[in-house]
Length: 211
Image 1 (spheres, helix red, strand yellow):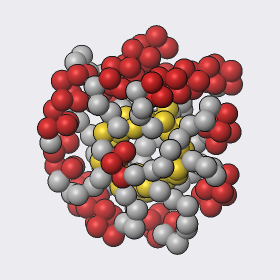
Image 2 (tube, rainbow, N blue to C red; image 1 turned 180 degrees about the horizontal axis):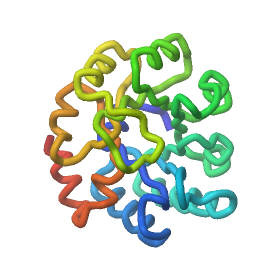
Image 3 (cartoon, rainbow, N blue to C red; image 1 turned 135 degrees about the vertical axis):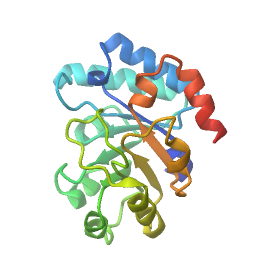
């Protein structure tokens, strides 16, 4: 699948550790897929996350579901798994190994990289093979135990303005602040709890599509 910036518009991230159990994971994911997300990232990290054969099993099911809904499928920080299940893309944080080496190993898939500061942006600015960058956390977030300090809207806007790649904002984004995030001219927003904790995913995504 060829990357285009429209894929970043409504970017949903989820791992089994973000919900009560695996059954709920599939339920939330399918509701999100059927109501308009434009990209899904499988991020299995943190306390209670799956590994090995269990992670592979879930990733294979996610590949089936995303294919059925024609939604691009990205795997977070697991190049080997991404190749095994024929994911469309991979995403890496600044601490997920050597970024240049990761890009080479991700051949055939599009690549996203997280950035939270000017220094981190400059560190990757001369690399080739990156397709998009995730900027944040914009606000404080409880969805990632390893999240960096919030950078705020002004820093987000500065990084969006200078970015040579399509951009997606991430971190603490909710229905209350989504409109102000999108007003920075970022290409999209990436969320976990705004969808996973919602009692009405359909309404959340209807609102999002109206912005």
